[in-house]
Image 1 (spheres, helix red, strand yellow):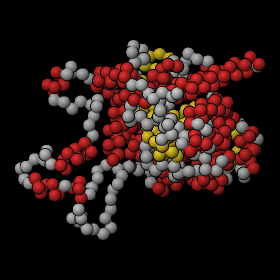
Image 2 (tube, rainbow, N blue to C red):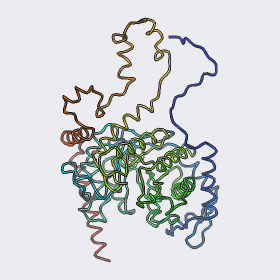
Image 3 (cartoon, rainbow, N blue to C red):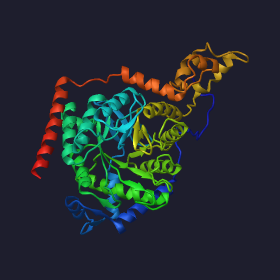
Image 4 (cartoon, rainbow, N blue to C red):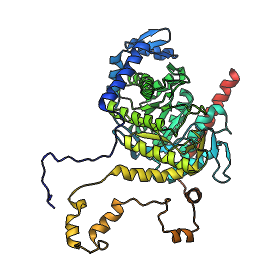
Length: 494
């Protein structure tokens, strides 16, 4: 139907994304990060990385490396503006670019809430398989992380055992860490076995390798740099994730935290692009504040949400995908604080456009993983995604003809227009209760917490992820066994 209204210079708001930083502020923060790297520099403990930086124009004095702004700007422009992650079957699923946001589970937690007993205990290897299976069942969890390090395996093999559990129990894209290049190689070999070849894995990667800069700000570890360069050689997506916390490893201002976070990430970015121009790279890490009373890294603070939002905008300014954090809380149990902090962080991440948003399911300031929190957040993410769709305004949705056809006092229930748009336009919950009081009472007067637990138990009982072939599973098991044997032999030789 021809438009009823003709207007020149008609503007359409096709996004409801917000702006916590202006373009000028992004430019100022970026320029400050370049200045820090050029004037102050960083300590690089890897001799190989120092040599790489030196021969490409950096100023190297002992372990201190200072970066010319032009080299960093070259790396920024060379890195791809989009990174695509596929699922285990090679189907392209996550398009990390612009303001697209995708949500994934948590990692790094020491403890785990047992979904059967409710006990808070150390993470076990099987917990990771259970969490991966639940993530596989939840429609709004887009990628999977490992839900904590297992305490019942050889500690130096925890990364490999964790990855095996993920690979066997979900088809969704995996974001995973590794202790060193040797462990990276084992995990990538497992992926190649599934994909069929390294080239097929490069074309449709279902893994992003996540490493950090080290334990202290401005000091980039030998292993961290080695992992960045190795992942770049293989042409696989990677994340270089510095850990920046106010008043301890960074300034007390949010702008200062952002400057430091960018400058730390840029070190990994430069290394990756020098090794392989155009290597897929995701900026980001954890930027947070330390609570002045408890001393914890607070996931629930307003400042944490502001920092995540700002990093999302900086990623869009730089045209490089950004890692964010959301769906987590400082609360220890399923209470209003948990719901408030998790929901606000998920909506903020969506509104500000962080691309790869990890942390869903983390409670107790990241110390503990909760499957109940994961299931609750899946509902909130679905809610958030509806908000992000915004309001479509066109001739059909304006419904002028339908309003005229029905007329004053009429109803719209039988109209084709209503049938077409009722499910398409509106979001309907699976956990949030919208029943009348009597109906709610008749159904058992269940709280949100009870509904979450019931849904979690049902999904764990019913859902089975698509299995790999027995031959591939056997080869993966052999790779893990071989890696463990090599590690034991190396330990004995020492």
